[in-house]
Length: 92
Ligand SMILES: [Zn+2]
Image (cartoon, rainbow, N blue to C red; front, side, top):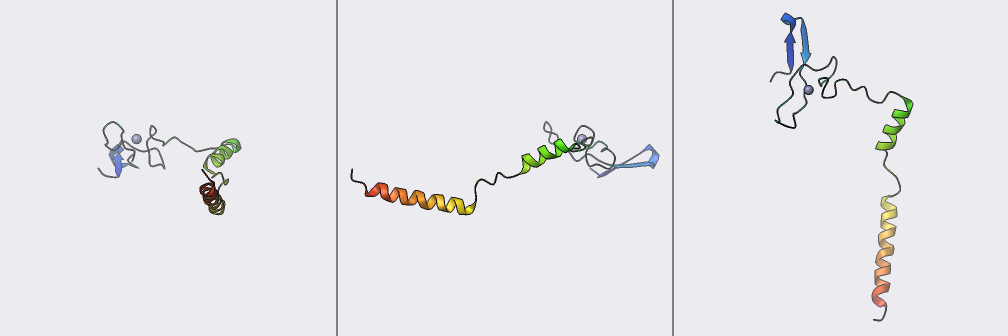
């Protein structure tokens, strides 16, 4: 399938929608929204977060928690190893 669609006797040249159908597995293929890669049903009308609140929600959703790090994990596993050794020393 060609990437562009030419309509209106060659006056309008637009991209095809690149979305893949869940049902058939084929490309959507209809004309994409202006300056976009997808048609109006597959995200061509999306504008992204516009308000400050929306931007903040996006940031919060994509931020890694930061509660854990390599150093913290190494310390934790070393302590766990030490605890297991002590547990094995105990008489049963
Ligand atoms: Zn589409």
